[in-house]
Amino acid sequence: MENCACNTCDAATKKLYEKAKSERIDTIWDRALAMQPQCGFGEMGLCCTNCSMGPCRIVKISEDGPKAGICGATEDTITSRNFARAVAAGAAAHSDHGRDIALALYHAGDKTRIRNEEKLFKIAGEWGITVEGKDTVQIAREMAERALGEFGKVFGKLQFLQRAPEKRIKLWDELGVAPGAIDREIVEVLHSTHMGCDADYRNIIRQAIRAALSDGWGGSMIGTELSDVLFGTPMPKKVEANLGVLKKECVNIVVHGHDPTLSEAIVLASRDPELLELARKQGAEGINVVGMCCTGNEIAMRQGIPMAGDFFQQELAIVTGAVEAMIVDVQCIMPSLATVAKCYHTKLITTSPKAKIPGAIHIEFNEQKSLEIARRIVKDAVMNFKNRKVEVFIPDDKSEGRIGYSFEAIIKALDRVTNSFAHPSGTVKPLVDAIKSGVLRGAAAIVGCNNHRQPHNTCHVTLAKELLKRDIIVVTTGCGAHACIKAGLMDKDARKYCGKGLATVCELLDIPPVLHMGSCVDISRILVLLSEVAKYMGVDISDLPVAAAAPEWMSEKAQSIGLYAVASGVYVILGVPPAVTGSENVTGYLTKGLESVLGGRFEIENDPVEAAAKIAAHVENRRKRLGI
Ligand code: NFS
Ligand code: SF4
Image (tube, rainbow, N blue to C red):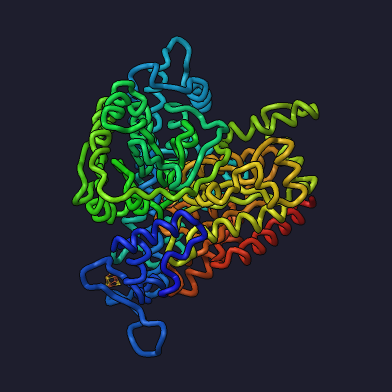
């Protein structure tokens, strides 16, 4: 493991890891090393702590040792229960994020806070909300109420399921996996996996599928769509990325976490002339707001704010010595930040009642007073500028790319050829034509996190490059998007990695070959795109020459995403195995058995070159089946 410490292809990460080492600061890589060897029972999902007769663990590596828990739960029951609970937690995180956005819309209160009326009216039409005779605020409030109702609706199914192709909706109904209320699906997983309840692994996974679908086609989609209503639908724009976006002469504020309501307010406050003047008085040249992880994606996509870094770079941002404040809300925030911040002058500010960290300053955010609170936080950061302790070191590594490819932005890009070739505008037809003709072989999503079990960024980037050269266009979100932009894959110049067909498509549409579609909740945008393509072709999502991969995933949210993608008919490659490998039945069901039921399945493959070959084989198989 010694050589594995800080195994990354990213230059800025390497340099700051070295700085951290020289300043005796422990980071993720040091803690991962100290954790070795990790528990084999846990790794294989064979440990159960669901009741206080446990913990129970199943011994697989020898004949001796227990083959069932104290209650008699088998390896199949225990691993599937653990997996289902992880999926439920992931679905809960995404969906609760969606609920907070719906609440923000409900409380918007004033028309100027609803930046995208066009989308508001579009969704209102889709949901059957009458708009005549109502003002924008009233419609927004009604829509928010309807969205909030999706979490606890008593009867019926989720509204957004209607966006899926007809065949998929029918299949979900037949299998009994079409989710009802979002909260209920999550609760049912917790109930059925309680001690002494469901013991049938197939049934446990079926319940997990419902919870996962309630994330992708429910909570996440609500999060994405209503964020667009509030803050605008992302459109293409240039941004800079990597830790080199920090500026030595400026007050640096890093916003980190997930909910765009906080970061949007901070960005606004940072442009306040009074605060800018105050910054100058403190000796700074200005206020530089940059984003980390999914919050970084959200404000980059909408406001063009620089993308400072991914999950594994959060501690390193502080190690530069140049960050006056790191402002966090929920999810993927390492508690270690408080320890690292103590060694520098950085103020770590938590803002959500759902996520406090010992050692951090807590300033509670609330949508009704968002700007006032944001101003206070920015002021605190400004006043901290003069307290820098160590010599500042900002690596000069940064890259540039074009991002902002929402579904709407992709349609707009496709319209470029519509006009020149007399296609109808506003449809996916040009994309379908490119796929049918074979100019594009297919499409793949590269999503997910960083994980010390995989070389940092290397897997995302290698996989993307391998796909591009095979004329498979890549869409990306989350920390995968950070990895791709840092490696220059969202730049025009990235056409050099593409096969001839893909390079031509990029040229014609004026797009990069890797399209940044947003944060992880925005994977719902990918679902919409897949649905529209499938509907246009008159097939199901599972028939399309597409795939998804999460080469460096780590979070429970990623497990929920993976499962809803599979349940939507997608072939999903995981670079790190989920903790189910202790059961051949459960592993086999997820990686093989599910395909005959749902048309999608998981594959476990840690090598990105192999993963690309498998995706290409899958894409060609689907093309053959479609007869194209
Ligand atoms: Ni996604 Fe966003 Fe990154 Fe992984 Fe975390 S930031 S929601 S979970 S680590 S991609
Ligand atoms: Fe052990 Fe069964 Fe309790 Fe799990 S539920 S801890 S397997 S006794």
